[in-house]
Length: 568
Image (cartoon, rainbow, N blue to C red; front, side):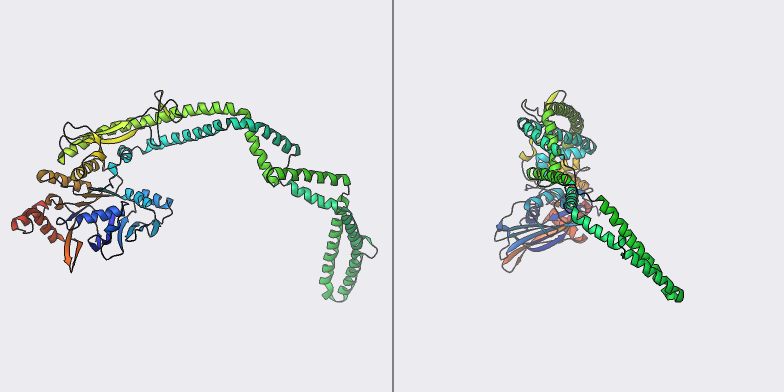
């Protein structure tokens, strides 16, 4: 929902800030007052082309800013999050066009590209009239409208699972076939490398363990000398540390009998003796394990040399060597079995193509059933809106894949082109006059007729349409009397599920407003300025009366206005 629209220094507009409401928002005003300028500014906000000519004379830049309530719009939330833009319940969309030609876009005060601005606009607004920003005129969107109306999400989820599986297998098969020749050449190289690495058979963290052992062996004589010396001094000699500590302990024991303050020192001497005994036991045990075997030393040096050679050839570290061995082992196995693997993948791919085809056909059948209902309802609604003798068709087409194509699904034993939405191409076609051929919506006449066609289709598709705001410009062109009431009724009904902003000249439509705004053009000094203001209840009556009788508002016009507004 559009909460407010700020426009500064844009064409005839100096500075306006209008707050829109829920339901049907009507904009009226005299011809040339600036109503279309409002719509043009809104189009600028939605990513349409900008020109420096829109900058108001005397200003340096034009600014258009819209604040949207997107609290229930998960699509917008996902889009903003994906593009690293902060998400809040209110989305601020701003566009600036300067005389220097710079064009700046912002989403929640985050600078962004025009493409992203346009993408977010496509999620928020449909603008109908003399504009390009009309989602129903883009044939690529027709399949989405149809699917939303048909509530196809569960079937599409099932299909996308098969589609994803098909893509993965096809990609693996493509890569494998492209590698077929290179695999043959690589087989001999892999075989040599595997033999060389396996001959050494390096183990994880083996190098550190060997270096530790090497250091011990290279220092065996020193270790034997030092450990022997320590053991003798601590325990074995006649005047060893252990003997002296025992003597000290005995003396302290005698002293404690005289003065009990020495008692604690006796315990400390016991601890010291225990520590010396532990050290002595460790040293004796360690000394007995010291190996002074030169042949073992040569063996470790040779092993480390072999590991160093492998590291130089295959990655620089032992971990890289082991990782490389695992990788080439897989590749070598593939070179031995690639033909069997290709055959296996081809069989799997053929099965998944059929499964994907079954899933796509289910979706297509539902689309065809719903397409007939949409076509019938659209024709009826167009007639009510004054476009009689119209023909409308939701055309669903399937395209066979070329025999040479590798990208296809199988439906009823035939190969079809497909994409992430199935194997249907969907397009809305229309003829507004008897005897004319059906044409794409984008080819129909512009102006009010286009707007009424859009209104009819939006009315039919309303229950599933996710776009919260619809803007209709000049929807009443060529419409009067009873048809005007029908158009107004359709807009009012549509406003129950959407926010509607509509520019109109017709009292039948204006009388149904939830909020009514008047655009006025005033001369201020030597300048002409367009402004917009929200009308209160009494002003609404006068504005509708003015549409009925012109500038001179009569009592009869007031009475008729009240009748149209349901006030009498």
